[in-house]
Image (cartoon, rainbow, N blue to C red; front, side, top):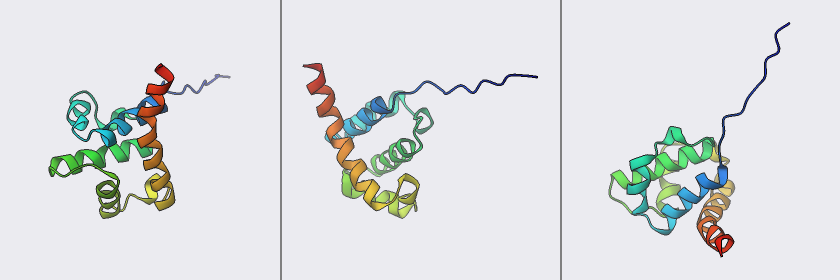
Length: 107
């Protein structure tokens, strides 16, 4: 009998959130992030969707902020894909806090 071992792809959800949070703090950071990352590089499905939405907003030369992100996700019917509107609001709050938490931990 064959033993099949399921392996999880290495990932770091906190690092993903830190990247997205950095874009909220400095929307121009999407330019640097997009030089090295693509949406498929994100392990977490919600993070993948949010990063793609941020790229779409940036491509239109609009400011990336919670309002434009929410509008982009609604326009593409993706709010439910990241857990609905309450989850989106919580997610946005967490993303904005993430870089500050990393800075605090570094001190």
